[in-house]
Length: 167
Image 1: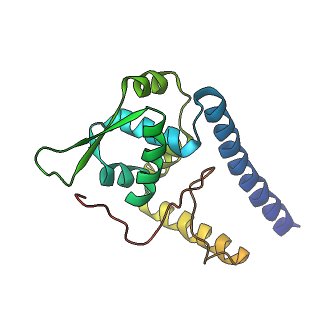
Image 2: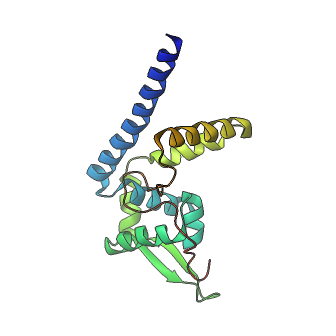
């Protein structure tokens, strides 16, 4: 019976995580008109601008090519600007536009940032335990071959080496 209790607890905790991301994504879309990954990007830009594409990618734990796709959509919405570096013409600096600054100040918090900040506070041994447990869940489901996608987005979180020039 104890095993069933543990299985139930694991399943319920997985449901809670999915529910939290789903609720966040709906709120981000309703309040800001953005996907979760887009809102996460503008929040990171807001806290760190100006920054390079590769720096934004590192802060979001995604590949630079993924960030480029997100930035393309944010730029079309008039929320970010790209400025070519005067020191290295290959490097592009990212900043929020006036409209982006206005939106980010009224936008909801970012669940991905909360998750990363929480994980970063854990001791290395605990992180290794969580990583091993997550890898085990992936193996149980037999989905090791799936490319990780951004949560509630269509962008891949991990791709081949797609580092833009200037990174």
